[in-house]
Length: 304
Image (cartoon, rainbow, N blue to C red; front, side, top):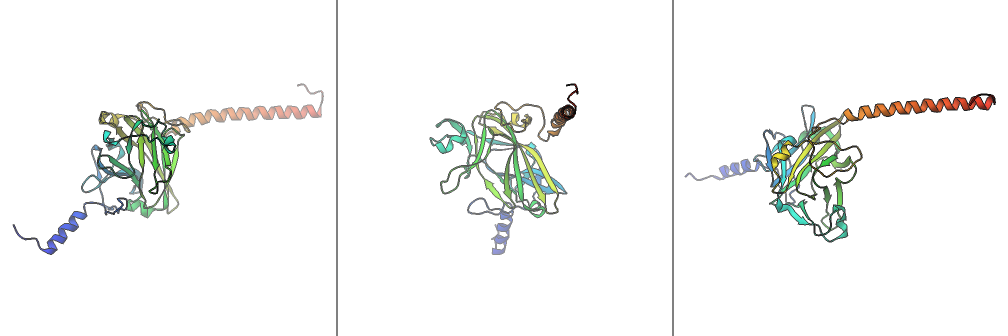
C-alpha cells in the first residue's frame, strides 16, 4: 500500500471536516454550509443533533429541520421527519418547588430531551443560521408555538449554567400562541419535557421582517413519538387540528382534521362576520334609542 504524503493527509483531513458543521467545545457554535441539500423521504431521528429553523430560498420562507445526524448534514421537511424520544430519556420530576411548572407530582416519570446532549436521546434545538436567512433578515425571528396535540403536556425551558431558576419558554397548558424571539445567527438547545408517552404534534410558525421591510412567515408541524412503544407510523399519519385562539392544549390523541398548513382564517371569517352583524344591530338600536330620548326631552308629549 503506498505511503500517504503530508499533502495527501492534509487534503484527506480537509475533506473529512467538510462533511460536518464547524465543531466547537460547547457544541452550540456552528457554521452551516449554504449549499446543504434538502433530503427527500421519511426519516426517524432518535439520537444525535437536530435543529428546527427557517430557510429562505428563491423567495420562499419555510420551516425545515437541520439533520446533523446525516453525513453530510442535510435539511429535511418537517412532514418527512419523526423525532423519536426513546425511553432512555425517562427521568423523574425533582422534589423541588422550582419545577412545579411541570405540573406533575415529584417522582413522576417523564421523558426529557435535555439541554445538554445525551448521546442516547435525540438532541432537539433551533437555529437561525441558514446563510440565506442571515443575509435576508437584520435582527432576528419570532418562533410561535401555535398549539400542541398529544396525550400529555409539553414544556420547553432553559436552565442556566449557574443553577439559576428554570426559564419556561413554551408550555402547552398555557394559552396559544406563545411567541419566542430568536436573534439572527443563534443556535440554542433547551430542555423538552413530555409528561406522557404517545404521539405529539406541535404546530409552529416562524415570522420575520426582511431587510427590505417585507414580512415573511412559515408554518409547519413537528412530529414527535415519545416512548419506545409508540409506533412512529402513527406520528407520520397523524394530522394537527388547531386549538381555539387563546386556548391551551387538550390532552388526547392527535385528531385527523386540519393539516399542518391549514389556514385558521377559514374558521375565523364566518365568526367575525357574525360578530360584525351583531355589532351593527346593537349600534342601530343604541342610535334609535338615543334619538327617541332626545325627542322626549324636547317634547314631553312624545310617545315612549
